[in-house]
Amino acid sequence: MTFIPLNESTILMPFAKTPLHHHFQLHLLSSIDSTNLFLKNYAHRTDQSIVDICCAETQTQGRGRFGRSWYSPVGENIYCSSRWYLPISDALAGLSLVISLAIHAALTALCHLPHLAIKWPNDVLWQDKKLCGTLIELIPTHQQCMAVIIGIGINVNSRSAHLSPIEKPWCTLSDITERMWDRNFIITQLMQQLYQYIHRFKQKGLLDFMTEWQQVDYLYSKKIIAMQGEHRFSGIAAGINEWGQLHLLDETGVSHYLSAGETSLQQSRRSSNQ
Ligand code: BTN
Image 1 (cartoon, rainbow, N blue to C red):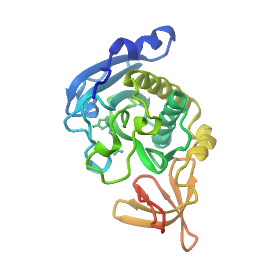
Image 2: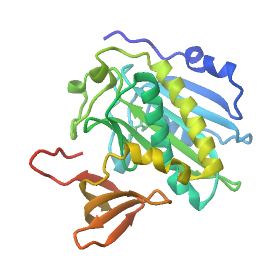
Image 3: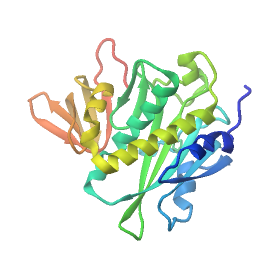
Image 4: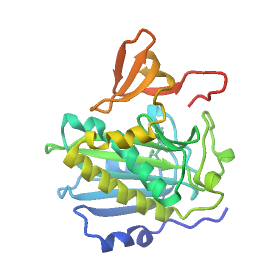
């Protein structure tokens, strides 16, 4: 398959026209173990307004949540991590949902996709199939700040039949839209949206995003199973609270609020299991 290579000036050109409070430093690599690992090992900035971004054509050890691997074929998809410095605060809890909303906004702006939803906390799904995953890692720094590494994998130009290992239903942008995409424009859009959403989150907190979340909440009112550590919960998903925790109402009417973990739909005759 022919593909358009990643290109620094295409990705960064739009930022030359808009003055931002943050300055993006792009590291474009042909191959790396993991773009998240690259930024974890990259020296911290004293100027914390600099956002380092690492994108690669392929990852040899792409990592997913819960220690899974992330399939990263050469040149087909987006493997992009960025490192942001944010003040340490309890309110950071909602950040991961806000990041998902930013990705959702970027994909919607570019591709005008209907049926795009977010499965708490981080999966972007199209018609019940996973299009994008996010791995967020928090690194304490010496100052009163956290370095937040946001690793985003978007299935772009692969054919989903070739995505492997297939444990769950997947899809790609080219499956959905029946065309190939220049990944450079998607990365630019992603960074623009991430910048805006993180800025707004710092000013106003998660509460400002509640309505937006409700509009894209994939799990809402569905029967689900949620695993948090060793604990298994089942019940109806009832949205999120002000801290971004998933509200699950169990069969006895008791509310549980989950701050991390994995969710899947309860099997019904026609439901799939994400
Ligand atoms: C998941 O859904 O399990 C999260 C997947 C995250 C994959 C991305 S690809 C870019 C970045 N580098 C990694 O090693 N992982 C993330």
